[in-house]
Length: 163
Image (tube, rainbow, N blue to C red; front, side, top):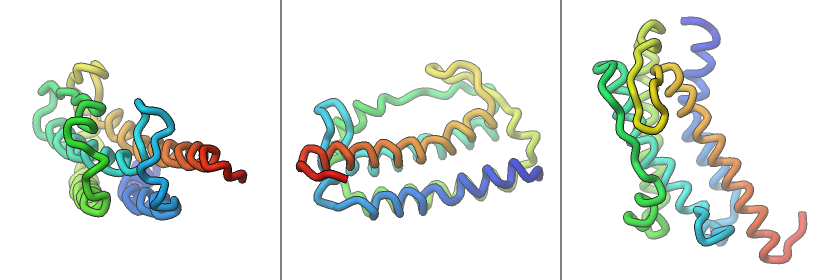
């Protein structure tokens, strides 16, 4: 396994811990704050990250076992509204995120690097390889950690807090 691939697997593996640290660094009283009606709260982001991981869990397996089988998108905003993310247990969904990520990490780490060339078609992203999707998923958690930080800054501003 190349050093680059090994490093990416480690970043992938530690994402739930990184997310949990970022989440716990934010005051719980602001978790339901939405910077605007169409934006997600920290609470909703924490639930979304697990639902997204559930989709990735399946997609990784399809890319490994069924290359070429099309992957379907899901409407993340519809899921957030329909499943009332703001009412779900952040703790339960974070546990789910951690377990799904561990299982996917262990599976991906056991694959020869050649499997990462497997490809398929996604209705939103077009043709993609397992490598592309793996890197996309790696970037997903830091993206949402940044979004949570921006929500925190907007919340502080709305509260009249500086700094």
